[in-house]
Image (tube, rainbow, N blue to C red; front, side):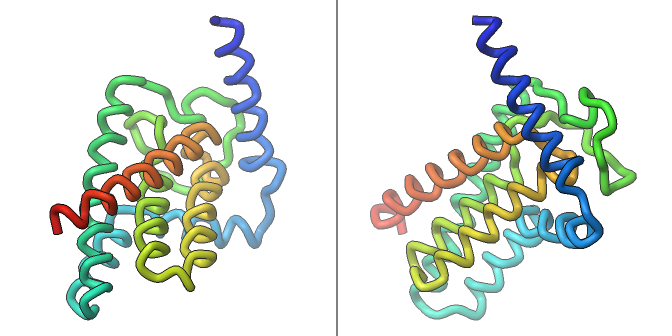
Length: 179
């Protein structure tokens, strides 16, 4: 079993290096550190607040579900981070490209930004299907940006996408009962 985990980690690190080092260019160096903030707490919670304050019936319901989904899924993210103890790539791998001088000290698995991005994307696509391509594309870009900026391994991002998606569908399915 240890051999399997080692093999998977090597593949994860290889994909990380591709996104973080080999894809590097000036345009992405400018865009990715900004895109990553679309999955941050300030942006996602502010968006929920603004949608609720200025929205009509469906928009208010979507904002409420998105808020519940984001806050609930972030609780799960923090639980995993405190139980799994996976160090961030820049703490383990050599020559990681970083974009901030103040680095995070918490753990890597799963990606909270990606979880929030997919939580928001799923809820918004349920209520506003014509924006699905946009919301899912932005959520995916948040995930890729987390790898590009050196914060997460690809498996952290995939796990965050799965967690955010699952939690959003669960919240929505229970939303009809609760809301």
